[in-house]
Length: 316
Image (cartoon, rainbow, N blue to C red; front, side, top):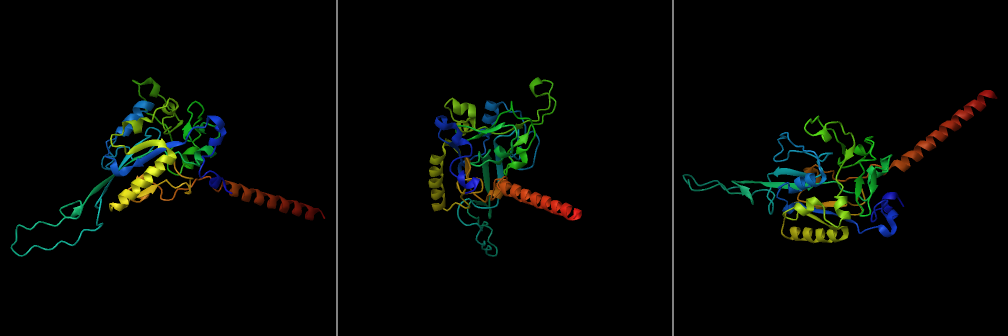
């Protein structure tokens, strides 16, 4: 049985807590009720004292941060589409008005404006707190660790800024913190260089509180709780939206049998993952490392045997 198969239910490293192990918790983000208010982004920054970012205009609707990073632990994506939210994906052909009829108006597609349907897809992205996390596998200092709640956290007092975890993450969540000089803020006036990401508010969890982003979300798009309970809630929500005919409704990261053993923070999306800038079929990047090392050792062994044979043959 592979490492991934062994950890499809229980996160790697979680069992080491023994009696101190807590119920695994996480996020279920229901994008169908997200209004793009960014309260989650603000609450995350305020609680975790994250430096400001997103001051540049990106041209991506109301999205000014574009992606997750060291200074963006919650990122609200805005996707504008010429599609109806519910019903027909293509508008029926409009009938031309009768000659001389000035009262006829263009027919509109469901949810459309003058024949063109329009919807905004808004999604609050976050670290996935994977069941099998490649960032844990590659960290040489132990700065990244699995908590008793099954989440993944970086310890900044141990991180040496090597950055191995940055390319290891299949979602591009982790990043080094680079700050411009800020004379009025001495704490931020020098290069940081360490890796930062969402901790799922580990300090709040230890105090018995829910994460700041979920606490601040006014529509309950971000739901926090025991992961098994969230999965049941997500299944019921998907069934309801499907019955109502919502276009593209699907769960992303809910399946414990996927390429990373399931997410600790999963989503209900209204289109394919790549529309939101998410990988459609993520796989833990360290999955093939054991096989790679086996092949390398076999090749090295064969090379040594060949060199020894050549040396012995040359002396005879």
